[in-house]
Image (cartoon, rainbow, N blue to C red; front, side):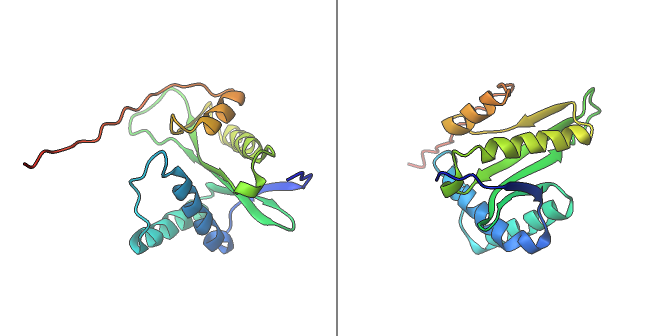
Length: 163
């Protein structure tokens, strides 16, 4: 795209909710190749609006913005609330997404770095994120930013023979 834009990363506002929800469903659509269990349904659209409204109200959802294009990316940050007492303060980054026309310009890296900084300012001693293992471009991004694999999740589809 050859952009040399002024990228701004800021906390999402409730006024951004409709746009963010549209982008959220683009993110889910793009993730279908990795995990296709989420249904594109009216109840889910309502649930996502409720979830995102709560995330915004809690100050955990961020947007990247370029004038005059508007919001071009998303990212979330939340404290890991393990039910047991832990030795270190862990925060989780999630929902990193950049609009297709704006990818490969470093915006995803800037969002992750921004969220790391915010997490550190809030007391994070470790930052974690989860990514689908076959999402090669995301894995490459996170490796380039110093993240390493810590947990492996195995999955198995249960097939029943009703014959």
